[in-house]
Length: 260
Length: 298
Image (cartoon, rainbow over all chains, first blue to last red; front, side):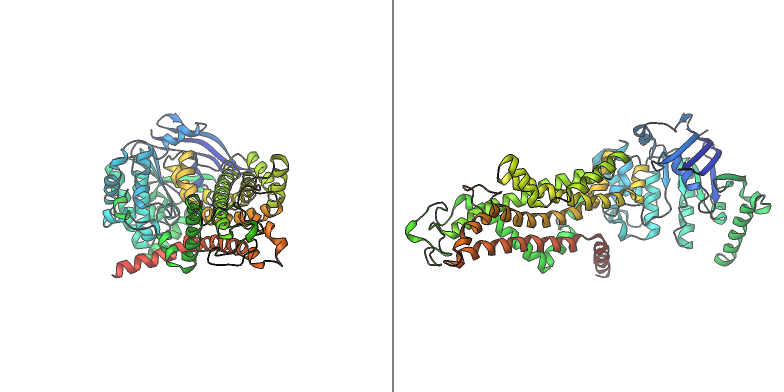
């Protein structure tokens, strides 16, 4: 079992934003977490990486490869981040450091975790850029983030998250900020890379149509709780919870408008 | 990474700095100041300390280009030697301000909440101290010296810079790309040195250049008041205070040190303004995108 989250609760002050969430991700399994904004899905992802704000209250258990992550010292957690669990963020415009070249950012996790030597950095960066199908890799590794498009930046983000070959990849709304046409390309890229590397995937989104292209197992979250689980097919056919019904309706509507 | 391709070209901000008239004037003045300071170690027209009672208050002439002062000393020679004090004070003050500012900024933004709030209080108290008052307090304890001027200017401007940089550092620390870097497993030390500080460095560089200008002014003011350079050390501020009582006898002897102080401060401020224009992140994006487009079209 790659990831076991049990009775996870997160709170700020006297407000509880994630309440008793439990789910499991098996080796090589792909799990989608779907929910409206504010449902606590992104916080759950950050909790797995130990990256919650310092004023957050955290309880429950997060086990990764049978090792408890909650309460782990930050430097131990730093060895897990990037190396064993990678994450792709929603907003590619702000997730890259504006003053470092794309090449330097691509190889940073590999250098941090001492998987490559500094002198291999340039060649490795070009390889990574090529692996996510960035055009003209030799040139693009020398550019700064603002010099490339949003879709290309998200490819860089994916390359960084997968650089060390993590056993688990968390994708937090990785296509939400992108055009519909770019979304399809990014989804296809995810699909291929995950297949090649055999990583497990937790795919967070609010768009059932997008999720259906990546994963079949779905967890539905609303107001910090898991309200429904099942397969994409099952949810589409017979949503049990009103929130699920709303999400299904929204995705059907967008399919009609966006993809005739 | 990718250095081989970029090395021959100057960084974009430096190119922008050199292409603006303000930046060029600022750099020119600062470079001249540095050159004169170095020159003073090797050569001056006359011995700047040699008094000549028979040639007091000489107007500018072929022998004494800027005339002589109350004791008959060559004003040009004294200005050249005084540049050394100004250069040392300006640059060391900037260094002290940078160290103090970085320390306050980092401790005031990235540490535990209690430390952070303590630092905030200390900054608020220290920021209320004018530079001159700080210098007078230090001089009362340690005696007047160039070091006191450097410490006073460095601490007071360091606190101001720390306050500016602290809020900027907090903003950058909360940004997505810092979270992303941490998610890649980057540790706290490397986050600070490679991700946070480089992102606030432009603000710092600008502030440092302005601090150097203000240090020049403060050194002159403090030496004028008698808290700065001791009598043996040549200083523009001291020249002002020595000659001011004879302003009716020989107005030019007061004008010269006043003018060089004016131009030095002007130079540092022009440089600071140009640096701000060249490194402002909001302008940076626009300028670079424009540059890229031009390259693509060519």
